[in-house]
Image (cartoon, rainbow, N blue to C red; front, top):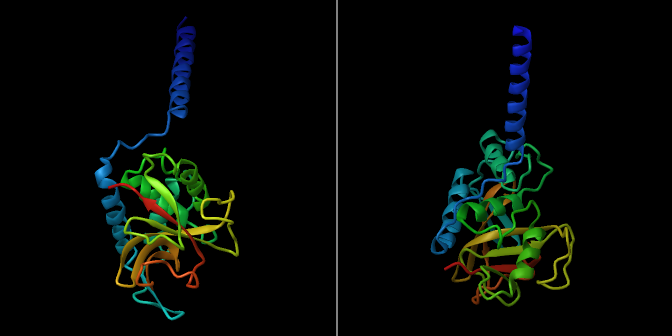
Length: 239
C-alpha cells in the first residue's frame, strides 16, 4: 500500500513539474513597459553616449580622406566589451558575443539602443540585420503617425537622433526606399550636425562602439564620396 501511495505521489510530482516547465516554455517574451514618446529621442542620445563612454570613448576622425583614432577604446573581444556586445545580441534573440569577431553586430547595437530608448517594436523591428528594420520602416513610413521615416541621404540633412545608413560589401540599392532583403548595410545614430561637422555613434566601428567625426557641407548633407556610400537617413519623428 505504501509503495502504491509513493508511486502515485511521484507520478503527481512529475506531472506537476511537467506542467510548470511547459508553461514556462510557452511564456511570451516579456515586453518592456511603454515609454513616454516625449522621452524617446532624448533616451536614444543619452544611451548612445553612455555606451560610447562605456567602450572608452573611442573616436574616429575623418578629414580629407585620412583617418585618425584618438583615443583608442575598449574593443569587442575584450572582456568588458564582449559582455556589452552579448547584451546587444540578446535584444535580437541571438546568442553571440564580441568574441565572435566574424559576426557583425552594428545592427544589434542599433536595435538594442532603440528598444532601450523606448521605441515600440511595432515601429522598429529589432534585428541583427539593418535591412530588416529598414524594410519595416519603408512599409510603415507613409502612415501619418509613423515614428520612423526613410529619407534620401542626398537630399535630407540628418538631425541628432536620426540614423544614417550606408550599403557595404559592394552592395547597391536602386532607391533609398527600396532595400532588398538581406542587403548588407551599416547604420550610425547622429549625435551632432552643425557648422560643417557631423558626429555619429555606431557599433562594430573599428571593433568598438565608436564616435565618428566627419566633415559635411554647410547644408549638413552627408558627402556622397566620403568614407561610406551613404544611401538612407532614418528620420526619427519622436519629439
